[in-house]
Length: 275
Image 1 (cartoon, rainbow, N blue to C red):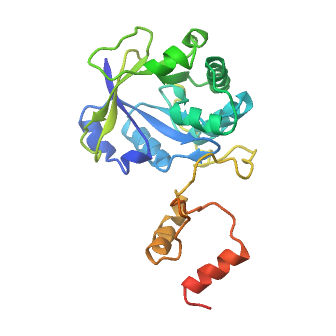
Image 2: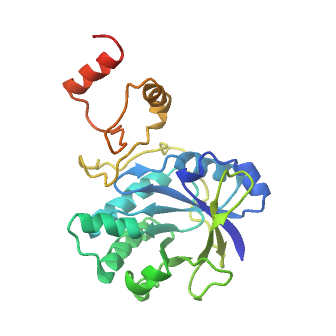
Image 3: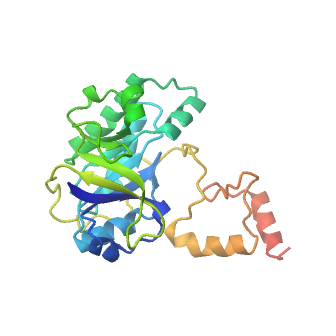
């Protein structure tokens, strides 16, 4: 069994040299979620892993409401990974919050529905030349997704125990409470049962980091409040919040990517003492 981890922005800034020295032999990295929301640490994590020779795959957390949206999520994921070497699969991740969001939009979430979304995403990934896979757990595999219809794709299976309870998983996520040197706090731990061949020998030097598909997302398609500043705006946002210029709404959403009205501009100028 090959020992690895899976990470996202929740692990913060990772010291990948220490992680590699600690014996981690692969990483599954969150590329993003929903409509064109790239994970805050994705580009750094992929770059570091590529430079250090740590084989990696990625996953995309889905908020798709239909098969067409699942394909669009796949396209955004493919655009994000284009500059990098990806050895392990690209996984489709539809979980409890995905179900909650779909139901809030009036969508009936059935086993057939989730399975069709997974097939749509994975087929698009496979058509682009990557290895496609599905992430799930025991509950969802029993009630919310039909793995018998997804056998041509790799399975990443979450089961927190000292022994896996199925024999068809390529990767087993066996703990969410792991501790690895180079990462502050807990991290998910995984074992891989097979060796994946590389998909791309070298990153595409002409690809632009963070490039997007030609079709831009429609306004208002982001399913969750996004308090994550773009990399170039991080310092400015932190200063604005610290000085009370940005305060957000009652729910704590800073609405960083919402349009600014004239009224908003007046409020900002007033808080700066310019009125």
